[in-house]
Length: 80
Image (cartoon, rainbow, N blue to C red; front, top):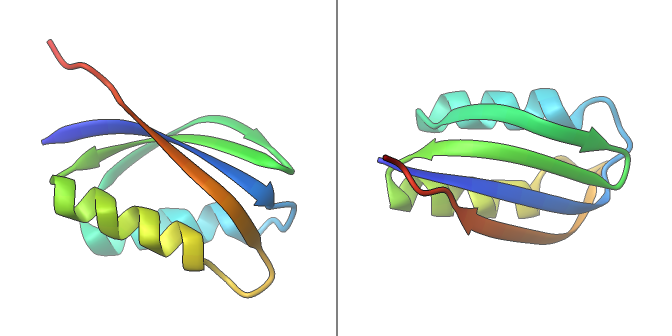
C-alpha cells in the first residue's frame, strides 16, 4: 500500500466535487482523508495500490462536468 497527498487545483467551487471524489475513491477501493479544502484547492490523502492511485488521479482530472481541474500534484507520504 502506498500513501500520497494529492493537491488538486482549479475551479473546484461546486459542492458536488468532494462527494464525487469520495464516491470515486470508494469504487476504486482507495482510502481517503481530506486534509484541506478551499474553492480553488483541495488537499486529500489517498492510500492504496500505486495503480489505483494513478486511476484516482485520472478520475480527479476528468471529474464531474461542472469542475475544472488544472493540476494534480502528488506527494508520497513516508510510512513507518
